[in-house]
Length: 394
Image (cartoon, rainbow, N blue to C red; front, side):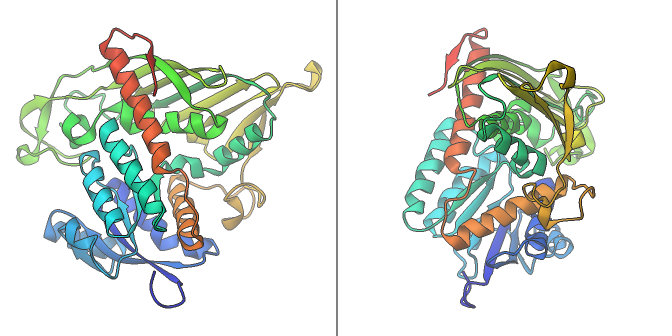
């Protein structure tokens, strides 16, 4: 913390593309809507290329910029390191930042492998003993309707959970001429749709039910094996233009799997980048002995709830518009009925993280939560390799 009575949290962010832009507006705006115990200060932005990083720092509101994250994590004017880079760099940056006594916010999935995630979680637990906090960025938890859903389940409104059905549907690589960006390379991304978007619904199933999967059976599919190289032959970011030649896609395009929760519920999951016409359709439904709830991120301010305890003549799904002051997060924003958007989940996430850091509490979701998700992803991949054999999750 800065020396001004702990009123400033000085942040370094590594990475400035899609997630970097989303996190930047979170850091810029969290204290403007939430009554926080400290004000985030956008101290330094780090990227690989000097000119591009400097331009991003100016655009996104960072006071300084750098090109070597190793120097950044050692700076005396940095309290928090926010990791928004491809998965192959998460481990090294997080371990160095925690060792340097910096609080860490790391984008999901936590790592590219279970071994890396185990190292990171162990380092986070050790750092916790020194008062150094860490959190993994499952931002969808901070959607008011989903936080409300979690509260309803925790209050027993659904009774015993029988089914969890979750899917995350996108279509941004349906065109076989879409270039071979880093998200389509296993050495950089770890996995494809499974880890990029499947991780979100695995985490949400855990978040909503409070229960973890004990095992899975699944399959992975790749629909396009070769793609054009981006401009210059390098594998750039999301949406890079086409270049000359092609390269192999080394991750999955789609994943489908089912599992069992600790409480016995049957859980089914689909994650795909080939659902033509679906841009960001993240959906989850829970069915219990006393009721059900359903959520679709394309209608992110709404939660559908069914009360199975009322007479059948009066029963039916009802819509809750999660914009009331008493709904999670919503009271910090607009008057009732004035909905939130995708970007607001990051502001809510940053507010949670800052409060935990300043108050000396362990933030959630933790690196251990991220490790659990990584173990599920790994089990799905191993199951697919073994002809969808049932695979236990440690």
